[in-house]
Length: 176
Image (cartoon, rainbow, N blue to C red):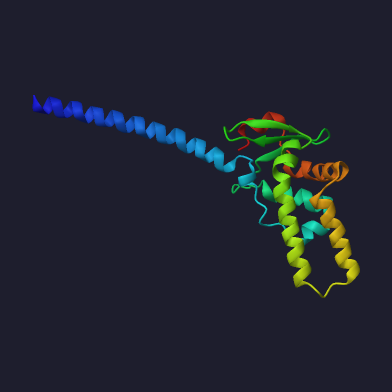
């Protein structure tokens, strides 16, 4: 009789462990998407440099590409139609959400880009006195375009970004 009770307790413990393991698996899947989803917290601006600023639209497309790059070399922000500037971003629930003409990116990520560009420029201007006045003015103009981009400037950057992060729409489901 005592052996029967012990067996029953073991089954209950095993049942609880299985439930716990299942819950843990579900939680870890959600955490994984939270860490790779395109959000302001996950958008990396650490690698922005003065060359990105000087290269204007090309630099901005490089900033976006670097900021959305995942450890596996893929991006959480992809272009599915380069001619229409149709982008998709990975959400926290692991789904791809349409971002036509990069509006989510512009409204949610751009303030972080602008802040970092200002810091990089300010640090560069202070530490590099060997450049001519004209070179610093050119860089200042480039910085101004990058901090408050016109619609045309932003669209040119997205056109340059598209081929770098292109994924056919039919392959999007299995991309990440």
